[in-house]
Image (cartoon, rainbow, N blue to C red):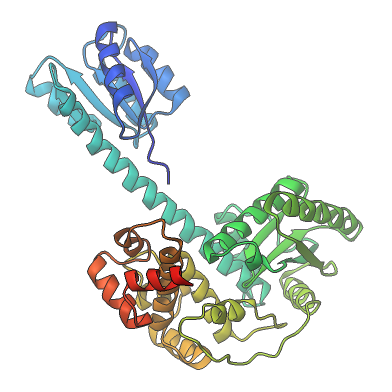
Length: 428
């Protein structure tokens, strides 16, 4: 998440604008002046063009004063933070500014520190909003992927309802029109990337590359199919399958060149309707080599266990196993969240916590929180061996607010303190 804050400076006095620009230019806190204006009318045009995060605007200006400017820009963009600057201390100004939705109100003359405190307050609001938006987008993408997976698995019986959901998510794929199912396979991605989050990012990149290659020529929907796979539903007539195949081959070449990752793909026959979507998805999965589904012995430290579990390829996996796969993926993406727990994970999977516990115990012979602990400790151990971060920073990165608690947990898990663990691996 970017911490850069774009600031627009608005004042009819050039000397004062230069004063503000100088302060912004010298600060090391991520504030960047994206433009300046000498009155409210010019400022309105500049704000529409430059989309600043923050506006510092004088109240008394020609053509359009700061209050009118603030009222109009807040109507257009309620989330833009505005701080009004004035040499007048009348109560009416402050009251009007609050009613408009202005964030801050600074009386001239003010010190550099007072200005920076004002900017920091607005920055905090902006960063919190960005994080909320990021999480909201992440949750929305995850929910969409879950829905598409259910659609492909034949769990959506009503095409009208399913199509309505797709429209709400802004997905162009049409259920009742002729389509194929495509299964993309990332071949041995873990030899290219050490960490699971890298692979998740790679999947996101592959999805974007696919959408760029096919452009608007095909209505489609992409979803996470677990392990090293992506699923795609594509509207295409039988005569157009050859063209789609050529574009998939182009996409694979781009992935190999840009991501250093080999890709393979499988395409089903064409068909139309919600039942055929499921049949297509089953048939395309059957093109993959089957592996026997079985429980694997667990080494508490060896994360390859989870990697093997995630990479298991079966034609149609059980619901419990798919739940474990999706939950593992979610944990590996979000282990740095100190609030992550079984209730939060179960909520994201749309199941009860008791059902999630039973699924994990049955397939991994481990508790959900035990698996999360393994993920966190494995990541921490990798960071410690690299030796490029402080223990307190590593603790925060893997979801521990208290470094001392992290160190105790690490020693209990590995039998060594973080420092002892680092020294032992340096000797090796």
